[in-house]
Image 1 (cartoon, rainbow, N blue to C red):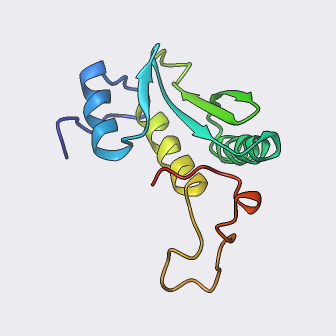
Image 2: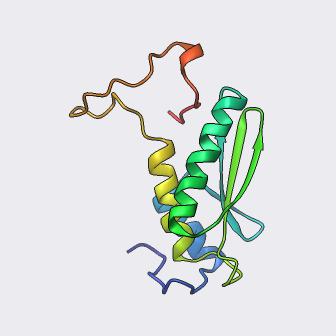
Length: 130
């Protein structure tokens, strides 16, 4: 465990704990206005909708609902636990799952038979962070 401690499902993390946990687990996520959030850059509207639909599916399956802002080449995901009025373990768990699924890239896994989309600009839909 890092500077942050495990908390009960609805126990709110302090800003310092959130910062430490984001730094350790989700370095591309930020704390802003009482939410943890991530900006996903895409190659256009259809790609943004794929990101939004993926996040929506994961959130609905978890019964934990984010705020999602969608524009032509950007999807912003904001998480907080409304019933607790702050950021809780639920937000971190869903953020980790979203990050795992959205940033998954076939072909990078040595054991996968999936190749992933070719590196041609017209065939990529997400602007990966590397």
